[in-house]
Amino acid sequence: GRGMTDTKITSLDVARRAGVSQSAVSRVFTPGASASKKTVEKVRRAAEELGYRPNVLARAVVSGKSRIIGLVVAYLENYFYPEALEKLSNALQQEGYHVLVFMARQTAGNTDDVVREMLDYQVDGIVFASVAMSSDIVTRCRNAGVPVVQFNRYEDRKGVAAITSDNFGGGRKLADFLVAGGHERIAYVAGW
Image (cartoon, rainbow, N blue to C red; front, top):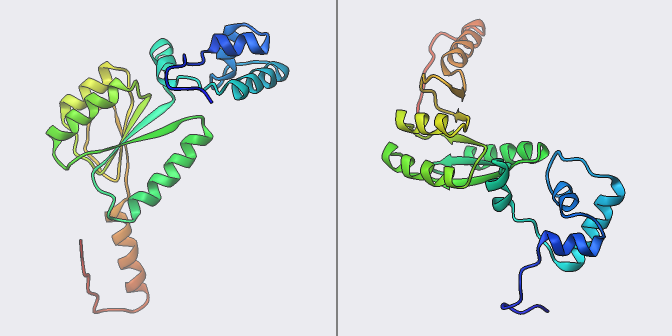
C-alpha cells in the first residue's frame, strides 16, 4: 500500500493512465458535463486503479460551484428534523447535490458565525431549519450570490424563500371537521 509520504494522485495521473486529456478527466467528475461513454469508462477504471478521488472543494474554488447545500439546524431532538433532513438530502442527491450540516444555537449571533464558515465552503445555497436569521446574514448571503431558504420558520424578508406549514389554516380545517361531526365541547391541548 502507499505510505503517508507518497504523493497524492492527481487528475493528470488518471489522464495518463486512461490515455485521455486532463480536461476529459475533469469532465467525467463534473456533474452535468459531457463525456463519451467510452471516456467515462476509461477514466473511472483508471481512477479506481490509482485510488484517485476528485477534490470537490478545490474544484469549487475554480468553478464557483461546490454542489453543496449548507443546512443550519439548531436541534435534532425532535424526530421531525432528522426525518426531514433525510428526505431533503435524498432529494438533493438526486439532483447531484450534497448536504453539509452545521449545528447552530438558537441565537442570531451564533448563526452569523456559522454562516461565515459555510460561505468559506463555497456552498451553492443555504437552508435554515427553524433558525433565527439576522438581516446581516441575509445581506451577506445575497452579496455572495448564495440563495437562502427558511424551513419551518417564517420571517418576512426580501429575497428569502420560506417553506412552512399553514398552522392557522390547519387549525381552521380541524375545527370545521369537529363542528361538522356535531362536536360542541372542543378542547385544545398544546405541548412542547
